[in-house]
Length: 398
Image (tube, rainbow, N blue to C red; front, side, top):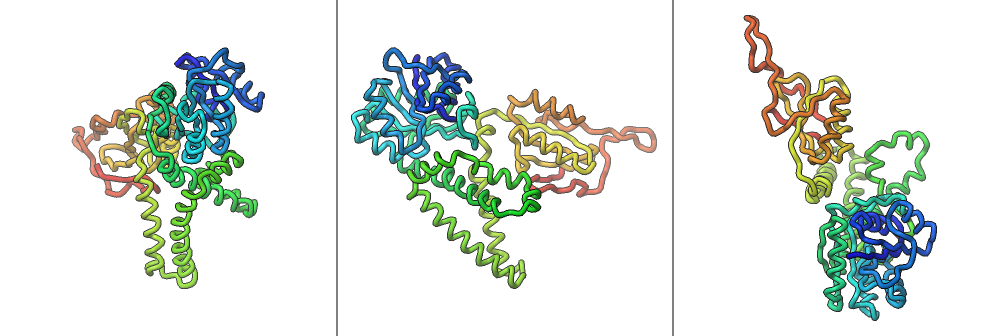
């Protein structure tokens, strides 16, 4: 691939331009908002001019309901030899495109990557690295168009996944569209909170409601385009919510946490924890080789929390950390795995805090103690259970 056109220079379109420009591909930027295209060009995503002839591939980075119309328009002007899109709904664009004259040169696409921010200034060249990129070719899609789309995915560092358009839409209704709605519903309740209540907002609320900051206009288009699958997921959530409300109302009136109502609440929370484990580690964890490490911190209040904050900076969650009670060490030993790519920065950050980052694949260094006769002991005995448990952190004895 030598030439590419990006139609729509928002977050995804500009990120595609940045990634492909780094690969030496000449990228032409097209947007109905000239200032957005110029901003993307200033970031290095491409050039704002018309290509001399058809480019190898055009990426349509427009909302789902606009894909078919933009495809027909750009195909009529001869913008590219092949076309793909990045809309997060596939059945509707693929169905409408299949009815047009450009059906053979089009393959539906959806990179499974994004951010809560929108617009070209939020774009990143590495946005797609290690992420799935769904392709939904129709029976009329040509091999040439499919090959161009596959090359785009490869050059952006993503992993191609082939799916039927309707199966894709059912999947993202559960994994993307409904979560956005739930975050928006929760965030909307904050409009009714008092200033005193808002001052109590912590990181948990921010993490849960973070994606509600997405572009409301774009998300309205997405939800309208994928309404039926989202309704199916929301109906199941409604059943769980009704059951939860019934149980909590009983507890509010009668207490009795050991009652059937209390058990139902606990079962729902346990199902949530099990569901979280089902999706496995984050894409950043899966895309990079990981090595085991350990750090021993003192037992002063707050020191272990500071270490967890440092690990969180490098995309390591508390539930992936294990604390080990090691009698031969002063303090608390924390074990975790980290991508090799963050080792230099992680070593710097832990050293700043006065901690030593050790290789977790080798036995921990013992702290020798003098005996009463002056001999050095290999081990010392300390009371069990001196390691305080933290939410989300597993504890084991060495």
